[in-house]
Image (cartoon, rainbow, N blue to C red):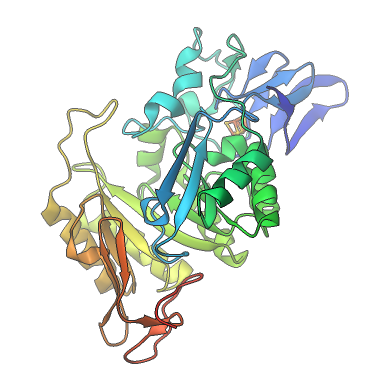
Length: 371
Ligand code: SF4
């Protein structure tokens, strides 16, 4: 169903064009057209979202799958998504749903570059609104929140596709969840505007941001976007007091050089501090990059080493179940405080959020253990 969008403005009172201020593309959309994500439409000078209460996916996941290792560890998170994304990553793992609205468009971009900071390509072009019905099941925010509680979840995650593009739905669901004592999580490419981040305070308690690379060129070519807003948002998220973890998918030949990994690790350390967890994840051939081999385990070990040598306290290798770096070690004495094997979590040396051996606090939110 369509629903009036948040964070938009008319260009002028006598102009039906609107600017969407939900993500850094800041699309300028003429009447009857869609934004670059293909799920927001200008209807006679009013911006509407086409994915409100259109859940395309609902699952119960371990919070570790997001991945969040320092936020309510060992709990379950009710996970939802709608179709659509503001990026067009060539390696997307969920491209069947993230790119569905874009692929449904029978006409390609019409050549008017959107306003704002957005990168080139499909990420910054207006689209013809030819398909108005976005696939998905009607699921109301209050019902999702109740389902999460009924299934023993501690949080709701807005995930699988980019939650920024379904922010109205996510924030209404988050509001219902907070009313039931649940927390809320974004798993995001970090391309939202600062205005949206401000609206998330008090509703969204943790974000995992996918920092895909340390070079703007990668973002332009592979994702159709710009790196700078993502870097700025990492700092804003910290400043707003939302728990942050960062994931980098390490892709052979694209972002796996020592130089680039060092740049990312140094940025995290210098701008966000040593307690921000960094997940270096294994790439598997996907979507338009099915000819690229999986990331070798040795490359991931090198990325882990680079993160630790830079001074980050919590670095994890992801998508490689059983790898020894899945566990959380006390940054002071090296004791294993949370042992993980895949999604199996054991609190071994953690007491009241601190190392049971030396008492060093372990960074995070609702870190548990023996009491
Ligand atoms: S791509 Fe971003 S700015 Fe453009 S319409 Fe979608 S959410 Fe709005």
